[in-house]
Image (cartoon, rainbow, N blue to C red; front, side, top):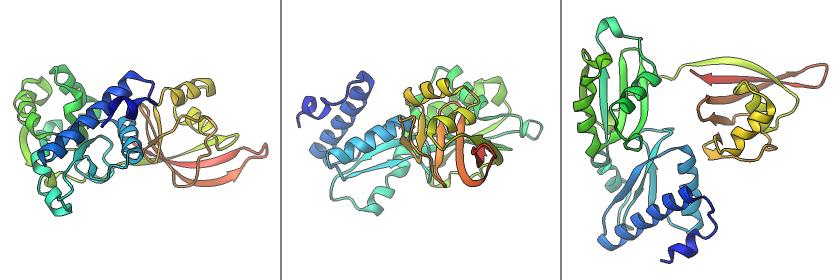
Length: 267
């Protein structure tokens, strides 16, 4: 395996580092005939890694975040002899759930930001933690198995969680919390991505272009850097730092020819 040759087309140092680590996992898995996995990848890294693995024609992998539609995922590399059932048996060795159940007087008090802020305040590494699923009565935090016990032990030291009940759960018991959505309408001159992002992020078109160039925009899980990309019905658009949106319908046209777009926003 010639790393330099495989990575020669990638200019960004952080991309090369990420993909180099992926190649290391592939090599170790092959030599030791065992499962290897990475830390959690964010949406950009998931897109980068998935496209790279297709390019090098690697088929013995899975991107897994604990539940369907997870944003943050680990890359699992496995030997060719593994089938789906063998892989599923290893999920609990890879990921665990830290379940925080709030006391009655604190239910509904905390948002995703409060839980993530607590983890960062503890000085713990973000890449060891996956999605944080927030409900009225608490949250399920998905984490690497070897890191989960540390997180469970340290969370009660935070004032906000000192009265909470905190337990470890197997990953298959992660709670499928119902996501809250609200409908909004935007009016755009065209269905170009920069127009859509400008309205969704509530910023200027030039700033929206910067956000796209900074690789912070994803369509259906794939990083998109073209301002002129045409958005279609059903597209799921994620803007890092701004949220996730679904194109639900094109509901009309104004007299000036602008398009009215119905959006579902995850809140």
